Length: 337
Ligand SMILES: [Mn+2]
Image (cartoon, rainbow, N blue to C red; front, side):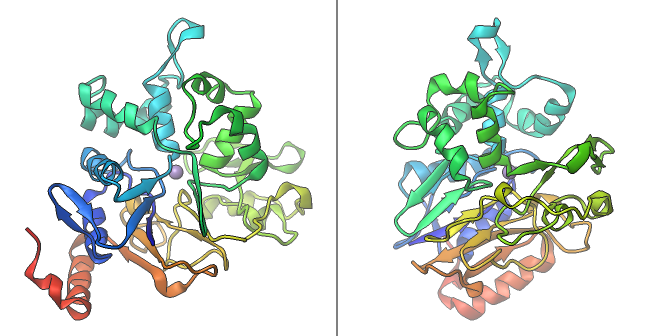
């Protein structure tokens, strides 16, 4: 059975606390559980203070058969940043613009841009599948969107990894494969009606909104929009046409990350859980604390609120977790080697 872990973004201490809480122990440099495996939802890097250690832990578990993983948009971007397009005289697949560099800067500093370790990471990121469709559950970073998965199929190997020749295609704006890749790794975005725009938290005008794509009912743009709180008033109440939303057939539970949720972790609906609870945000603007979130999956087809686990940052949450660990699993009080 599997323990699913959401977006980590370079926060190694919460990751180790969460693994410990889930019953994993570090032995010989690799975190293991006698009976369970982790599935990571991607986004190991960018933002946090210990990005090398997070990659080391996750990669070590994957290579030792203790974990599976999918690719997050941040690993995708990292590969594209560090790869050249042979058809365009060696230009990077992801432009080295100021905005793109700022988003990636802490990773580049921590890993050392163009270092041997950087190249090792990039080689590993390229091996991460875009999705997992296992017996009993599905995993993808942002959006399970069958039309996009169909478009991407010819660009993937039998493990759902991008083929080497696919990278120049899926990073080229304007191709169907680019849009499909964006949808599965960054979520389903839809244009606002009549060319309307809203302004994001950096003041940039945006024509497209990220959606709660898993909603099935007929809803308005405002109902579906995942935009910063302060921007929601700018989103119109017009109804969205029904064919826009893929829904989800719900025949297996689906786990995603990516959405920077806040509050107390809970399923999005009976069959879909998002495990990204903004660990990289520190204290969120709603006053809550960012969390690293997991779900202990025991084979159920309907998600169970009690299977969510999480840890936060800082001394308060550490104390709470330690006392809870002592209450529930006194055998761990002796610590680990
Ligand atoms: Mn993401």
